[in-house]
Every structure is written in C-alpha cells, then in structure tokens.
Length: 635
Image (cartoon, rainbow, N blue to C red; front, side, top):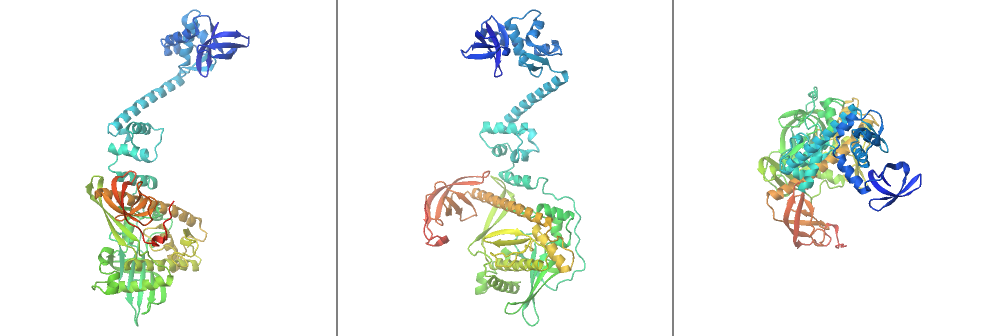
C-alpha cells in the first residue's frame, strides 16, 4: 500500500510499513521514515510506485487547463478526488487524481485552499483583481529589467526624470525605479551616484553634493514665497556722520558700518551702525516666517542661499551712497582712548563708502601702522578705530583673533568649464588677526555685549552666546562668555544673515523706543527659535565645510598637483599647506605631530571627496615644545 501526503508545503509519496489505525509508519521515496496521522493522508493507492506517481502526476498536471478547471468546477467547497472523478467522468486513477491535486494547488489565485485536499473556486471579481495584480507585477518586472539594461548601457530611463533626488538621497525600495537602479549598480559594480553620473543624470559631481543639501533643508526649493515689501521707517533722526563698511569683496549683506567724528574739545564720537531690517517687518509677518524657516544665510564657495529675499537685503543693506536705517551704538572717546560715555539709538545713517579688504589691506596693515605708509582716504578713521580696538582688547584680557591662523577665501568662476564640470576655483590666503580684522572684531564684540547687557538690565529676554568650562551654548538669559572675556554676549550685529540677530534686534529696538518686545520673558517661541537655530546653524556650517573640502579637491585636480607639502596633525592625518584640506595617508610612517612631509598625489575622488596620496619624505620635524608637545608620544 502506498500513500500521498503533504509535508512542509510539499507533496510526498511513500510506502506504508505499518498501519496502526490512527497513524501510519511510512517510508518516503528518499528512504526517510515518518509517522503520519491517518487524517494527513490525501490519497491511498496500489500503483504505480510512489516515485513514479509524482513524476507522472506532475507531467499530466502540466496538460490541465487551469482556467477550464475554474470554469467547470462548482461554487461550493470540494475535495480534489471528487472533482477529479467529475472532471474525468470515471473513478480517477491515482495518477489522474494526483494530477488534479497538483494543478489545483499550483493555482492559488483560481482555487482557495479550505483544508487538506479541499478547495473552493475563487469568486470572479477576486480572481480578476488577482490576475490584474499579477499582470501588473509582470509588467513591472519587465520594466525593471528594461530600465536596468538602459542604465547599464549608459542611458537614463525616461521614468527617472524628476525623481533623481529621491533616487539618490531617500530611495524608496518599493519603487520599480529604485529596484532597477539597485540591480544595475550590482551588475555594473558601481554606486548609485557613480552610475547616474556615468549616465549623464548629474551634470557634475558638484550637483550631487549641492542637491543633497537642498533636498534635506530646502525640499521646496530656494525661491521665496510671496511676501509684502518691507516699508522703510519714517521719522527717524538722521545722524550727522559719514559711515563706511569693511567687508570682503563678495559681501552683499552688509550688516555693519562705522563712523568716526571729531568731538569739540578733542577726542572722537565713534559710531557702530548695524543694518535694521527689524524696522521693516514685524514678528508674525510673512517675512518673519521666511527668516524663521531659514534661520541663517547658507554660505558655500561660489554660492550662497540668503536668509532674506534679495529685495529685503537690497532695502536694508548698508550700501554706499544711501541713507540707511540702523541701530547705532555711539561711543564718546577721549583723546587717550578712554570711553567717556555711550549711547544706543535708532537712526538714519548716511553710508558714504563700502571698503573692501583687498583694496585696504595693502595700505593698512601691521607694517604701515608701525613704520608708516602712504596716505589714503579713511586712513585717519581706520587708525583711530585700530587704536580703540587695541584698548578694548586689552580691557577684555582676551586676544580677539588667533594671529597664527590662516583664513582661506574661495572664488569660483562659474563661466569656466573644467574636466570636472563648470567652475574654476581660486583659493586665497590671509593671516587672521590683521588690523582690520581686529578693529571689526573688537567693535562687534563691544556692540553685542553692550546690547546684551541692555536687554538683561531691563529684563527683556534675548538670545545669548554663553561660554563656561570651554563649552559654548545658546541661552535665553544673560551669562558670561569666558572665551571673549565679557559678562554677556548677544549676537546682534548680523540681522540680515542670522535669525538670532534679527530676534535680538526686535528686542533692542523695543527697549530703545519704549515699545512692546516681540518676545516676552519665558517665551516658548523664543526657546523654540533658539533650539531650531542651533541645529540648523550647525548643519549649515557642516555643509559649508564639506563644500570647502570639495573645492579643495577640485583645486588639486584643476592644478594637476602631483606633489604637495603637508603638516602631520596626528597619526596618519595630515593638513596641506596650500589649501585648507586634511586627509589620511595610509603609507605615512610614524611622525611627530607638526612634522612637515612631502606627499605624492596619486588620485582623488570628487564623489567621496577624498585624496589618495603616498608618503615621499619627511622635510622637517617640529622644535621641542612646538604645538604644545615637549616629546613625541608614540603608541
């Protein structure tokens, strides 16, 4: 006696070794012995042999038309053996019954299982829906295969149009386009960005990095929503000064300017003037919503995304030849550079010049200050501000800038095409701590600390930078900034570029004008703005550093640099001399931190933003005690 049964979702046949009424001992065609409950037996037969049964039944099942079986079976639940008898018109043989069973079991869309060997035909509407789904899957699989082939052939599928950001930065693995891309990447042995770059989906590697940032922080694009134009305030007093700004050549959001006016009887009246967009729109306005969402201007080499629309920046920037509304701090400075009095006010300030670093630094620097130099317009005013800044710095007991640090400036000519795409980058150097750096830094520190103290004294909340124990954080109450050596420090000098400064300017103007502050004490909105600003500002800064690194690698490729000199930072991490770039050199032998080495540049990668270099030679080792190290600490 032989039996057909189901085990682990598969049909098996075997020989009965022992019949114990309720259970059977069966040996399968593979020699395995199993114990079966009699209820588990689907079919008992005497011929053919178990192995032959399954082989012949599978062959015969292939000849059965599933759709015809569905048409002829009734709507009620049935056993496969009964249906086999009805289908064949006679008691079926073991092979015929098993063939029907196999065909019914292999078509779950047509026949729903209702128990061991029992089925029921699927309702017509459910069957049609299932067949439509199956056809959709078939078409989708064909489309995936076609898209994969197109990608491998260097062609971008039409379906990819308009969804590249989602494919690159937030892929939905349920979408057929993502499945096709992943399959093509496996076959090509390339990452998704490299494959899409090869297919021409990205104009250059720059797009990959820039668009990733936009996808994350500007999903709706960088264009501004509609807003009402800000109104210039009327009735403000006009200051009797001639103010000038000091900025980099590319600066368009000119937030600060200075004036130096001789006083009768000696000394000067020094003015620190900050652009006042807070006078043009109020908290809760459309422009406030724009600034609140962006929180800061985003800077990157060759580009920027402003916090405020260009129309607003143009209205309030301290451009030369205009009378501009400003929040001003005036210092009555004696001839010995002591400050006799100070006054804060909101006024209209005539801006007569926008000085640029590259024009002024050649004639106003440490050498010309100590050894004399040519006369030039604004020399007297700049010298007074420099002398005052020196006194202010001494009064704080803290250096305003690291004299040994080098700042780098990036300029990208987008009209020049290179092998790596549009953009020819130039990277300049200037040592931090120049006289102009110091005078601007000291006067900004004075303004920010003075106005922070003003808010604190009248119990009007602001947003402060607090440093204690070496950690810098934002706070809504005044606290000391140990690094700067001031009792409190509230960012207020860049309201065109930072939302924190704009908030503080609203508060300062309210105090100076006797109005109602935009934010009350313990305001939850103020605390929310603080938290959001910290997170967003850190993300923007990280993006700026990433893009500066990207353009440094572009510069190395652009200049076809083969050898570079670098300084060992620690272990195998080095910093280049020529550009602000750090990377690891696997072949670098153990070196003193601060050692100068020569490296051979063997390659670079603009997608991973990495440089591959090989150690060539050690050029110099640091002097004992340099970089704060008395001896080299090895492993």
